[in-house]
Amino acid sequence: MYNPQLETFIRVADAGSFNKAAEEAYITPTAVIKQINLLEASLDVKLFDRTHRG
Image (cartoon, rainbow, N blue to C red):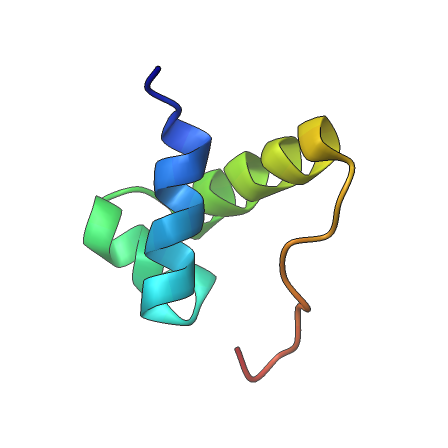
């Protein structure tokens, strides 16, 4: 089963930041954040510690 939220999660983990992952996926950083937030909500777990340094 294809899940774009999981693909975005992997891309963010590899890139190290939401902005870099967004650039690689040719989408906005807001779209990346929304996908990660949806994934975190559906799993009921915090996947990333968000800081201003990435």
